[in-house]
Length: 72
Image (cartoon, rainbow, N blue to C red):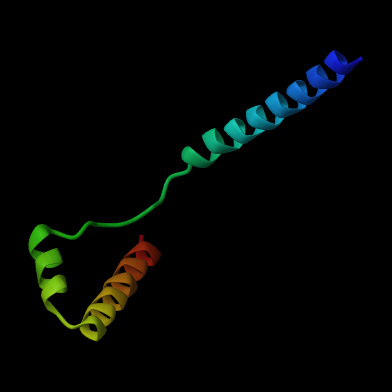
């Protein structure tokens, strides 16, 4: 009787682990769409700037990218 209970628990655990693996595989196949990358020089310039300036540059870059995507 106890072995049947242990087997049921083990099957339940295995099914839960299998479901988790399925979700992980699905999640890992998603892609992130982005336009353009920063060059090494641009990254160095960003790191040398104050935080507020970095935020402004990044926001400007995002606006330019979104406008470019809308025009395409």
